[in-house]
Length: 360
Image (cartoon, rainbow, N blue to C red; front, side, top):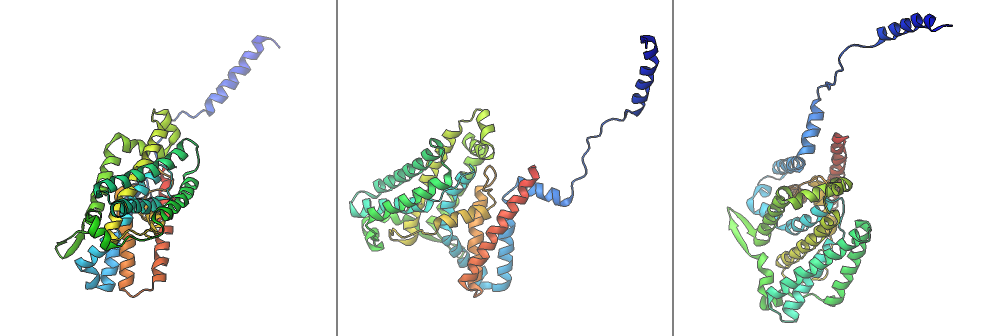
């Protein structure tokens, strides 16, 4: 067949295909988001909203059930005092979880630092400010060890801090000889160590210096995490470390600084702890690890890193305190109080998983 004979058939084929081609303009308009989708997006953008709402609901429920005893200002100040240590430790735990890590050694660091402060100030007779600085230094060293193992040896934070928890706890028992320094001795030799026990009356509430310090510390870290380059780098490393590295962020240096800062915060918690209990006990703060993780999770910080709020952690600690206080005033057994806290944790994690789907 010649080329002249092929031309009409090719032209006919072209006309047939051209007739089937869609000539409409591509439409990229999305469906209107549902109310649930918009709520999901709102809560994802503002993770503090959920713990704030849960806290208000808890206060409303127990105000109705318990009445005046729960609503009394002194009761609220009691709750604030009870969550002070967890609130301070929660700050350290939050900045680590924001980097997609976890620290199981925060409680052990806190107790070890309190023992160092007490032994140097009361046992060795050093001035209290020197003992406090030494305790803060020990906290920085402990955090630095965790950070070094995570960044240099690429070990999982969970395994690293589980191991150092045992090490720090053993050092604590060895150095303290498992003996408690009495509150009377601390008061006589180093009253500065108990300064956070100082209380003031405020509209029927009895606020301690420790509670005020916790609130100021939370506000300080809220500012640092939201308005400084270091805070933005912490979020970036937790959200996507590879993208952060490509953007020029020195991720190992950021992680190292986070663990050191967390160690110093734990040492500060040790000072507050001495003010809270009066004495220096190597057995104090045994539940601080789990309580701090509980406050962080209920406060809306994602265990997968990159998303969360330090204010939410404070709300998380207050939620646990309010629920335990309200249930206790209602006459509920301690067993069921722990049951309720367990349900709160599971609901918080389920909500986090639901909110993470908004970005998928």
